Image 1 (spheres, helix red, strand yellow):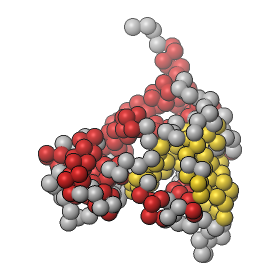
Image 2: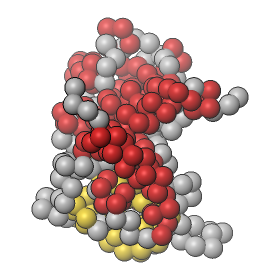
Image 3: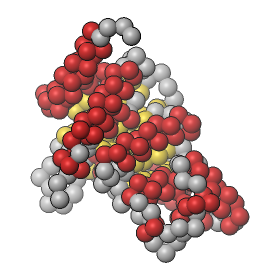
Length: 302
């Protein structure tokens, strides 16, 4: 079957230009707050220093000397193609993968010094295939992190309902359903609700919307924008979708062949690419954005 974007080209392009408009509008917000991989002027929450990870059989490291910091309350998007090291970088933070070298700190403390279960329970984790338990109801799935902590059932139910309501799924309607009774977009909302149920300081999101159609994907992107403003949570979001990165990130980190090519605001990566790879990657959207800006500036007043 043809890709959704090929089957619905007009809707797909309309969505893309809405994201371009949003990017253009957001240029004035905090464009100099973060730069060069380091978060400045804010309390640092996540720090990676010269982090390296290799896997057997690979000619090059999957993650090669990555240095990066993320401020408390910031949303940073790691952007890159498959195999560039972005998902591995994310998994190094919650120790699903252990580094070969370098240092990773959360709130100033090395992740190696923290008990691994405590570390993971302090973070929400959302993945593309949701990982919902098929034999549990939606409410039970959302309350899973609380169940692991030994929270009483009545409190789990209350928190599950609260989280479902927060992600736009009325608990009276969806709480007793099972995952197979939900659409792909609804399943992802449940996955986000579950990740948030433990009130984490950090939310790790590994291409959570990658398998969804364009309309559902955009709706969930808008939902994420609302949630991050409401919760003031620190988010590391991984995607291969350039427009998704520009839409969601306070900053965008571009990865290629295991290296971090550039980290910057939308304006910085579009207008001041640090490497030839970043320039090529953003050349087309930068041109589209300039055309959009010129059309806005040249439009007669209404």
